[in-house]
Image 1: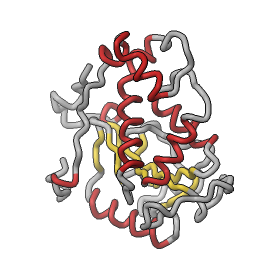
Image 2: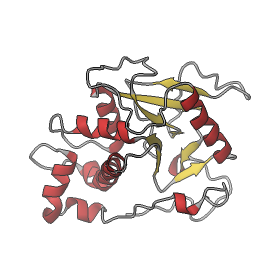
Image 3: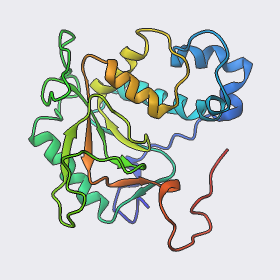
Image 4: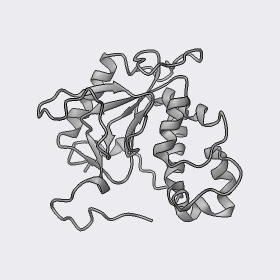
Length: 236
C-alpha cells in the first residue's frame, strides 16, 4: 500500500511490539499496564477491556515516543487502514493547508501556554491533533457530503476527538498534552477511541481537527467489492 502511494519505506516505523491480549492481561505485566494507562485499582474490566487493552497500550506508547522525540508531525495508523486513491497528494495538500492556516506550527516545541484553556473553536493557540480517518460515517455538519466535488474541509472538534483511531496525526505538543491529561487523575479502562475523546475534552490545550472527506478508512468497515480473501483477516 505504501509503495503504491509513493511513500518512502524508510519514513515508516512499524510497531508490532509485545502487546497482545495475553501480555496485556497477564499478572506479570499488570503493574506496567496500570502505570502506563494510569488506571484505577481493581479489575481491568469486561471482555471488551481485555480485548482492546493491547491496542490502547500501543497508542499510548506511541504518544510517549512522539513527545520524547519532539516530532514535528507523526501519522499514526492502525494495521487495517485503507488509503483513498491519490492519498499522498491529498495528504500533502492537507498538511500544507494546516500550516498555511496556522492550525499546525512547524516548531515542534511551540506548544500552547499552560494558562490557555482552548475553546471549541480555537484555531491558533492550541496543541493540534488531526483526525484524517473515519469509519462510522461521522463528518462535520458544514461539509457538503452530497456534492461530488465538495471542497475539503478542516474543522475543530474539541468535544469529539475520535471518529475512529485508525488514522490521526499528532505533534510533540499534542502528544504531551494527551499524556499530561492522562496523568491528572486515575481512570477506568477506556478503549482508545473513547480515551482520545475523553482526554481531548478535558485537556486545556488540545484541539482536535477533523478532515473531510476522510482520506483513510478502517478496513473492517469498508465493503470488499473485490472479495479479496485477506481483506478481513485480523490478528488476535
